[in-house]
Amino acid sequence: MAYAATVTVTDNGSQEQVVTITETDGAAASETQLVDSVTGRGVRAGSRLERVIATRSAGTAATRQPRLAVAAAATAIEIRYLATATPVATTIDDALRTVFPISLGGSKLYHRSQPDAGADNAMVTTYILSTRS
Image (tube, rainbow, N blue to C red; front, top):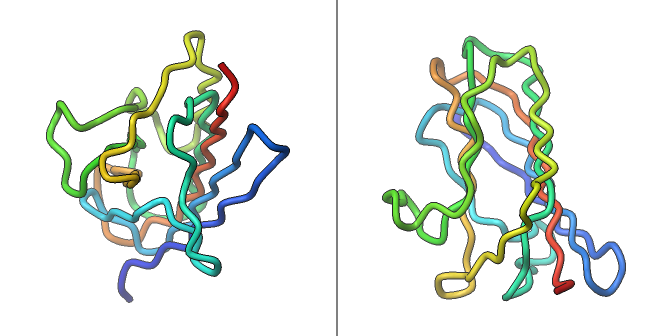
């Protein structure tokens, strides 16, 4: 099968958005833009990343390392968040100590789960973003 990602962008009050990415057949370079798969709505400019929760339910990977970037196929300078490489049996739950702004490159954000092996990984990643100062 081919990589597929479903993105849901939900407003959780006037200052918070919850972005959930559900991926099937994910590989290391599989990437999706943070745009709601149904409505086409993206994340708000000037958002701050507050929390990241990531799980993997199937596949051959031993670790994964989710990231957010302001460009597709991003280089280091374009990456705004990079989790620590974590075993797939462990839920990543980064409640960030320092909430940092995400300046959007052309109002776009891109997500990669970055599993270390296989092209058969099923993963769910949730980003909680806020426009509170």
